[in-house]
Length: 308
Ligand SMILES: [Zn+2]
Image (spheres, rainbow, N blue to C red):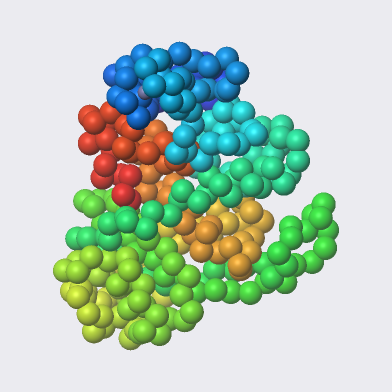
């Protein structure tokens, strides 16, 4: 399980067909061999009539290797799901539905869009742990397109507006730890406190610029730095690095973000950033391969990152 493919070629060798994908799912579900969820029986046969489904030899209960995952009941093949999740989890710039459509040679753009939407749903974990320790906090403006459809063939004109985005970044040693991003209605104290309450653990120290919206936020220790615009990237280097990466990503991949989906884009950015060192965990999270069916040792290894 731990030798997760590090390249597209390795991935192709590891998962050449649906049988290889199904074997991976079966191993994730039953690391010590088949166990019937109904009677605990250890013997089963693989059905010929139903894809990727085992039938218990004792009670005849049928269990699909995709049960409980995002792939269950889908008409798309396991290889398509695996490739889509791998590309979305590991491609540093992310994958738009349009890119998946072209890269995977899917029949229609609509099916690619649905595939991407289903995988993205796993990118927000409501039980994730808030950030702790020293946390840089700042807000910025992100441009969005007012037209919801991409300009056809590069033509057409899209309007543009700006939305406020708040960011919090853990500082770990000399680098960034985990990140949180949220659309905020404005940079008022009320908006920023709502963001801090959802993102930062009580007792954490927040490092901000001198903006008046931050002092007095309940539950956190505040370390304000009154700086001019020119010096903000020196005092708050990691949150500024995140903002510039986010803006470059938004322009490069999606040709501008859409207002109605901005929070979903931010969630995707955060998901990939927080799992940049654990691609295997990211891959499994996207496919909905639950931590409950992972081998215990592997679960312990990635527990901290999965909650990120
Ligand atoms: Zn059984």
